[in-house]
Length: 289
Image (cartoon, rainbow, N blue to C red; front, top):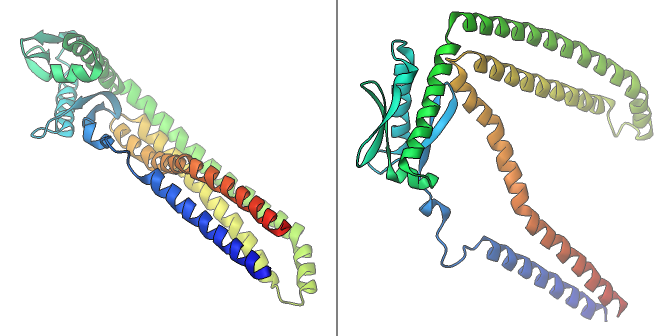
């Protein structure tokens, strides 16, 4: 009877594994008749001025979205540097095939019907929206580079640097106190544990583990604080603001990937939990017979 029960248990476990593998394969398999998202998506690239995205443009095979966005960014920055160009001169010029945005006789970009189709608006409406964005960006570009604002940014950066130094000294002091407190609190308990274990567990190993954990926590806090400081300082000055966006992505991209992976795995986790509960119930029934 015991042999039969063991055989039934092994058979059931094998069946559970097969069902789990089949479920994972079915979840990963693409749905027939549907095209991958990459095949139907349109490549877009943002036009950025001082790190801020104004709008995104599409491209074609011969002139990619990134190349087009880079060219538009260069033209906007060039006319923003030329204070002789009035902001009011930035306007649209209509033609049969496209709408041109220009500042006087200086071209900035062309808006096509294909661009408007992505936004589900008319070409003229989209060009007017782009024009308003460009005007605002040029005005902010010039304002941020005024002597008064640069001096204010420098003062803020100096204050942030002093605050960082003070926080680092405070962290050093607090972690020293925390280490001393931990040593006083746990030293006697660790010694008692060593006496009970007859030197099987070494006190030095336990205390080294505690100190290593505290040291790791201090390093993590300092790294996060330094990252925040660098990001703040890069955002202060207009010339370095564009570099703050990639640095922020360095932190947010892994967090997004981890969160997306956890959310994607939740259905599989729920399926496995239900499967385990069913398996335990069936095994209990087998033991009853």
